[in-house]
Each structure stands twice: as structure tokens, then as C-alpha cells.
Amino acid sequence: MRKTVTSAVLTAAAAPGDMQLVRRALARDGDAFRTIIKTHNQRLYRIARGVVRNDSEAEDIVQEAYVRAFAHLDTFRGESSLATWLSRIVLNEALGRLRKRRRTVAMPENPQAEIIKFPLNPSDDPERTMAQRQILELVERATDSLPDVYRTVFVARVIEGLSIEETAEMLSVRPETVKTRLHRARALVRKALDDQIGSVLLDAFPFAGRRCDRLTEAVMTRLGF
Image (tube, rainbow, N blue to C red; front, side, top):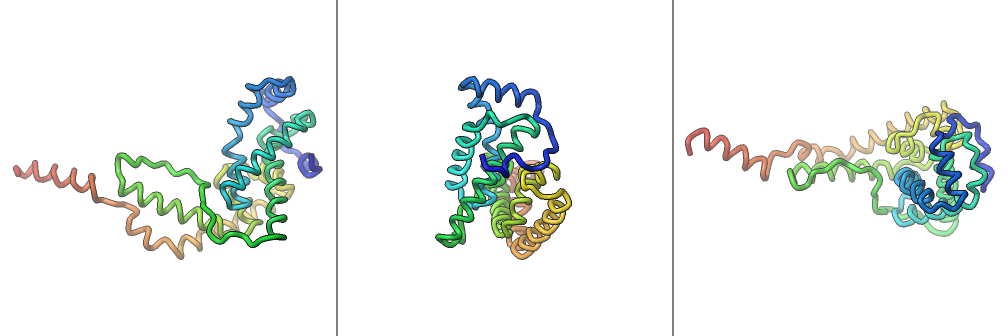
């Protein structure tokens, strides 16, 4: 395990359930491994995706991080939550990949984005669904355009919902640094959205298709037609 994974000042002890899962996994309980993976997949994927901005590479990073974590599971002492411990391993792996990539090839300009999950109900209102998807795409592009130092904090705090302390621990920085970077990241995202949002706002509250037809028929019925 890299030293950076376990050397930070820890802020939140692991829950009893974490320690129980770890003990079961150390005993080679397959269900314990499966539970750990399913519980943390989404968070770890989003963290990796926030760093490398590439879907398939993020998946590969998470897989590699799990292998590393499980190979060194006996070093987990419960001083931090299992989620934080795993997140830091993923972050270290993702940053390492990013540094290696930059030494060899340029970053892709428009990688596919799949970070934030928007609540959609496509069968009920396709016009609103389309508008929501447009907004989602704008937010994802704005997030992807952030410099690395801000993007990682933004993904951890805003998208993944980690606390200031958890984010600081994961990044091995002070909580004040997280707050400063988050403030800057939000400002940059807001500016990016302001520059692009005009056309999307035209469709933000759609009233066409089924909704329009439904209202039209209701009024016509009341008018006696």
C-alpha cells in the first residue's frame, strides 16, 4: 500500500459494520467482498471519473484499487471509515494514472461524461426529460473543464457528498484548503454554466407533446367540443 493511503491525520473512525465486513473478508468470505464492492462502487467510480475524465479508465482504476485494497486489507485498522480508506486508494491510483498519461499522451478533449445521475422519468414527459438531459450534459461538461485541483474537490464534495473533513483526509490537505478550492470550483462551474445555459433555459419548463395535448383536450371538453 502506498504510504499516502494511511499516513494522513484521520478524522472519522470506522463503523462497527466496517470492521465486521473486513474481518469476514480476511476470512475469505466471498459475500463480504461482494458487499464491500457493491456498497462503494458508485462513490469510487465517481472519484476516479472526476480525476481522469474517462469512463472506461475510471472503471479500470476502481478495479485495480480494489485489488490493491484487498491485498492489504490486514492493514485496515478502523481509524477511518472503510469508505474513506478505499476512496484514498482510488484517488492515489487515479492520480498516478493521470501523471503517467500526461507524460505520454494529451488529454482527450471530449471524453464521454457519466458522473451525475439526474432523476428522469422519460415515459411520462419526454420534453422535460430532454431538457433535463441537456442540463445534465452542461453540468458534466462544466465539471470536466475544471482544473484537476478543483475538480477533485468538487466531485468529492458536491457530487459525492463527502464532508469537508472526509475530503480533506482523502486529499491529505487541510479543511481550509478544501473550502478554498471548493469555493473556486463552484465559481468556475457557475461561470461555465452561465456561458452556455441560455439555449437550455428555453426548454427548462417545456409544455409540449403529451402535456400540451392533455391540457388542450381538457379545455376543449370543458368548452363542449
